[in-house]
Length: 60
Image (spheres, rainbow, N blue to C red):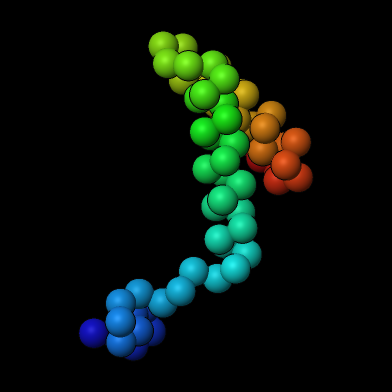
């Protein structure tokens, strides 16, 4: 095992800032999909996701 990428029990913990941003992204994606439902073009979801992320204070 490479000590730089893995700990004794597996992978190193995710840094708190990465965890925070990742949670915001997943929350926004879930909200968009739940609100719009399936069947739209990817570009529609992309624009709505970008808007949600912007509203959460992330730069897109």
